[in-house]
Length: 312
Image (cartoon, rainbow, N blue to C red):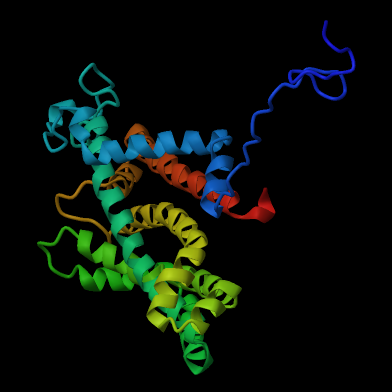
């Protein structure tokens, strides 16, 4: 017989079975990007904007996936004809396929928007880093220069600069509009980057790296830039949509893309002349332009809210 006062190895002191417990798994600490991604995955507006942006980018890169019609094949016999199986949006005043022109017009609009935003991003990054990190008289000088640039009317400066850069009658205006928008749209990004750099360079990890003998270049590109670039990238996402609309504005005014170039701005300018009798050549490119700009702005807003802890 077994001793009743003896506790078996399979029984705990309280009379309960001694069941081995599995080790508790501790969640690894997430970075700011990890927290932002976890928040973005739950936002419907983020996924809607991503799908819209992806469709526009595919349309710009491979327009033949959406239409096989030639946007330059026009016949006056088709002038203002309604939608058909081949021309879903009908024909314009020159007998051109509106649907084909809208699809192929996405490329120039997106290319100008992306390249001008990239140029503005590089300029704004340089000015913001220099002013925020070095401070002193350089910060004061660059800040006043940015204030002067902000005081220049954007539309007026864009018309003058774009018209000057595209003086060559053989030019399609893509380079001129890209350079114009890039040189005029970097100021807000420079101010945002300057504020982020000033906040980052006063953190403890930067002070520790400086005490360990890190050079300024290493401090900037290994510690300050990675921890201050998030807000700047968000701003560039918003700026991309603005630059696409700005290209359409300049093309509408006749100082943007020209000659054989196809863009939504040119189509809107041409459609405005006959809007009272035939509104569809104006409505369709304006609709595609509005949806594209809205998609980039929605994406930028969603990313900004995810990276800003105060807005969660």
